[in-house]
Length: 252
Image 1: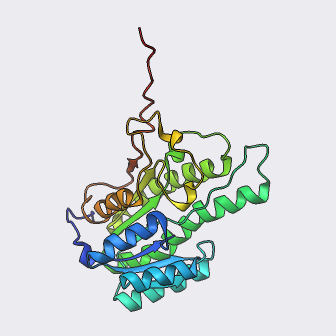
Image 2: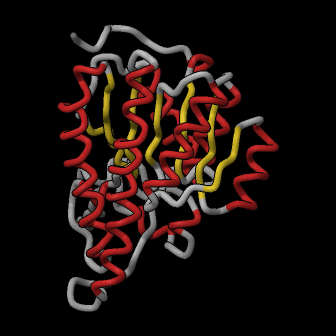
Image 3: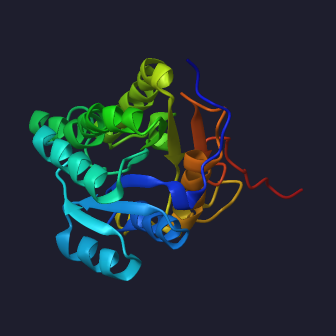
């Protein structure tokens, strides 16, 4: 049994968006809800999440992605509220600063627990429901830090490379159930996570600016609805950051 060559109208999506209260998750909720999708915002930022739910008509649920029990409850609620579940956007993540020698073991484990184990628990809980719905798609938010190294954020880089591997394993495991699994790799995006980063961060990119959350959201919509021949694949939205640097050549 193979994944069918079909597309999904956004209004037919029934999905959970983790880290959905703001940033890339919030932009994706707004975009998909406006197109008629049935969306559950899952986050620990209750005030922001409830406000966005009121704005968009989405459903909000408090979800700590490191809790297997909370994941099972969220999936059950989504199935009941929407009449099924056919998509998951594993977007929740945290950033921890520190090198391999300055990061405490507990802090390293916390980043891995949220960014990698949290995504695994989401797939583990949601995949059976998506299979019951006849198939669908899962999008995992990795990062350009899952494609190259960055100094000073050892735990984050490790988690995002791990999520890249999890995506490929899940794509192979879930293909017989008509479930596609892909990863997105944002570069510098203007979100609360990048607050405090200078515009100089992007100066050497081919597109020398921060991206907007809506630019990632449009890619996620495509991956959920249109990318019917893609699974296990990596999609980069980074202003060309991993392509290389634009050098300012000396005059003369």
